[in-house]
Length: 255
Ligand code: ADP
Ligand code: MG
Image (cartoon, rainbow, N blue to C red; front, side, top):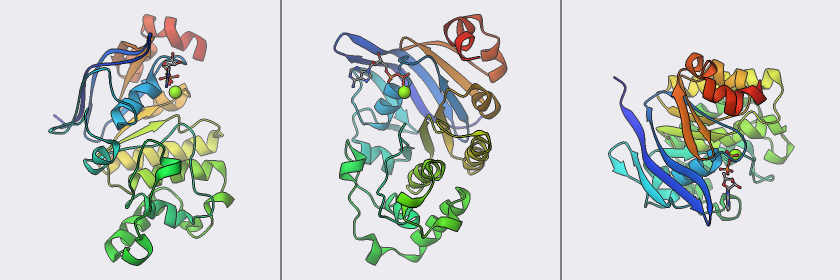
């Protein structure tokens, strides 16, 4: 059996009277691609934000490998192997693609990564091993050809890939990606699927939130379905596609 990387138990997140996440439990294994789906407002982004440490849970436990992480700040979760991308691309337009990815190896992240990512003198301290790792990530994410371009000059699809590359720079064991395919056209979605499979091939687990059902069904090993903050189903893509509760709550409208 594959090693469990992430174990979420009885997670709850309330915003005042809004119960955004209710008693949510699930696990993610090493090298697994887990889909997190559900209607708008069902608690997907909140779940990712709580897992990543952007906002504290109301209650519940989160284990990353052997570590209890629910009380750790975001930076320490990144250091322990959990990385995430945001639903919308956040970039430094004047940085080169390579510099942006390198920053992912050397950052202090606070609640707002756009305002508070602090590069720690990487231009002078960038050692050969870091450079090799960054090259490897650029290659994996199909960004090697445009590594020297300013981030502000690349396409929005390329910026999406850059967000993933920057997250991968921290050498995660698990990567959380929130709606990576939003706004992408078919061939870009195909490239994204290839990239996520490539990430899995390196033994990194991926939790993906996505509304594009063909992509989710083709990509995921397992899917967890949320509705009003609660898990209403969990299973293989075939099981989820045939689940009456899921069709009722979500797939009926998405299909
Ligand atoms: P999803 O990503 O599945 O569309 P979200 O996790 O963004 O859903 O939202 C889940 C619920 O929590 C929604 O009712 C949303 O309005 C609410 N919510 C999310 N973030 C906040 C916040 N910061 N403050 C108050 N309510 C929030
Ligand atoms: Mg969302």
